Length: 128
Image 1: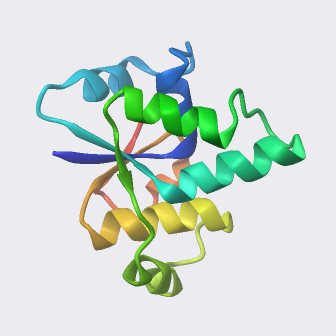
Image 2: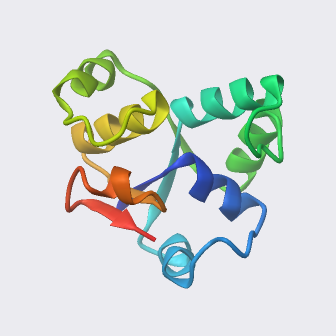
């Protein structure tokens, strides 16, 4: 199963945060799960870290290193992902989250998120 991690879930996973739910841990540790992080998440981390906005415990460069070290695949942003955003309902206005949803639906992949608004896009999105 291909699993795309939303930005927060990915950060919680690499920092072993207590915010990572038992359900999320089970999915992350499942031997059949191939875990992915989007380039959009790296972009979000880099922007917010450089601006000092939000809680970004690592820089984009550090996050990329940790994700690679953990064996996560890095999902590029393809043109089809970008244009798929246009077809999404307006459940959520965050452009990074909307791109993650579009990527998961386009590939297809299961998206692991802690955000109920993101999860409302599809039953293929796993709320953890």
